[in-house]
Length: 144
Image 1 (cartoon, rainbow, N blue to C red):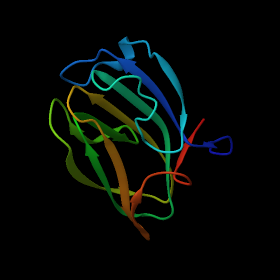
Image 2: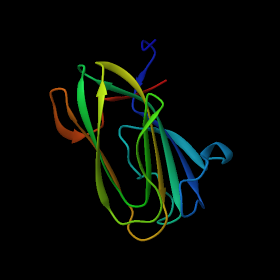
Image 3: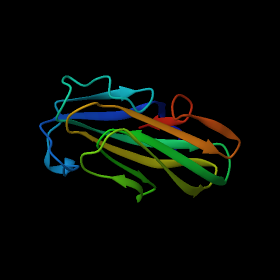
């Protein structure tokens, strides 16, 4: 039932993670809230922090979509319970692209991000199904 969804994506923020994506289920977030898109602006320090984002991705039509992730350090993206991207551990800003077939409508999406040290950043984009390559944001992300 998607009638009770609101625009945005829920996030939880953590500190003191480590070299790999932690088991967030065992951790207590320092804060949580809702953002319009996947971003790290609520961070409270520059290194050793992590985020989880959970909600729904809405796509306009059934098609093959490409999800691009540009992150510094660990990133895992799960759509409809299936891990479609995982780049764990320490690395510089790298761009990955993963293709996935999606039916038009809503899909669960979870993104886990871990910043170890050095530069930090995250940019998540989508392309396909009539959508030109763009940041996944307003009108595409929803939460309950």
